[in-house]
Image 1 (tube, rainbow, N blue to C red):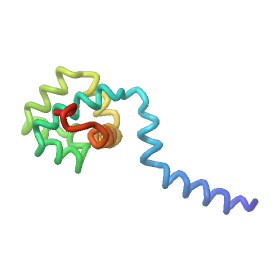
Image 2 (image 1 turned 120 degrees about the horizontal axis):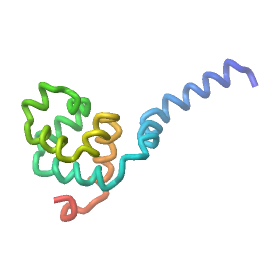
Image 3 (image 1 turned 135 degrees about the vertical axis):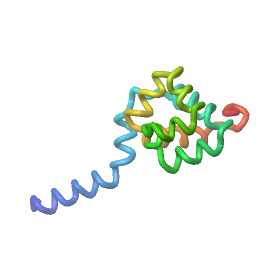
Length: 108
């Protein structure tokens, strides 16, 4: 097999698998943590929408000052705060996947 072809194919697979691979790598995030955060966001739809569109806002001190409920939640749920800060995009993608699978009565 031509080495250039193989390298190109491997790069293509990495690009396609990138987001799902990153989520799989964050295996120390539990479904329970994601569900707990999803429940928190369910009663704050505007905040949930903002974080869904830009998960890295959890790292922004200005955003946290404007959203003291979130800042307090992350302080009192240190494990969730740690996971969110490690990989906000993967955490929020996990939250969206769980929310789609659970009936509304469980998440509210």
